[in-house]
Length: 174
Image (cartoon, rainbow, N blue to C red; front, top):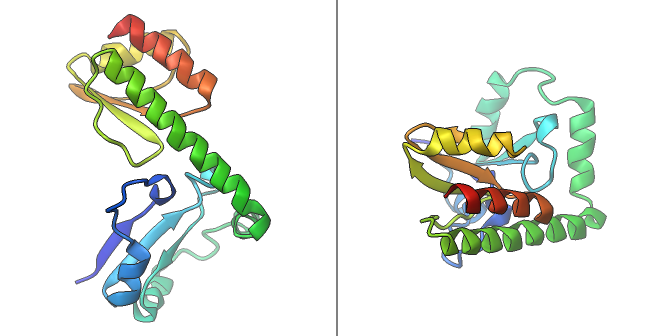
């Protein structure tokens, strides 16, 4: 049985007890780790990522992968992201998102919102049946959220001024 770990948000994880998928992939030949350049690296529009797994697993994947599924531009951008010079930029960007995530979580909690812990670049705001209305009202204020009707909204952590705009809306709407 193959176990696949989606580590799209691994760069944003601060939990000390988080699982290290790459270590598991090195230890077990039935573990595959998927990572993307979409989130922390900021290459969402280029649709590029990678898999770390036992050679037998990657050989099987190569048999079914679409030819030229990653463009030359996407490949060049991903390679550039792995250069040592880009590491500081990545580290700084992730640190800002993690800091903002904490700040937004604390402000929402002060407003009385029950915000679960997040280890990603977004927060979950469990609003139940108020979710769709909350999202529509935010949209009227120029803030786009992903609403899950009757469950909650997903709030992506952005730049400080974007998060401030969201918090102002949340203060008015919650």
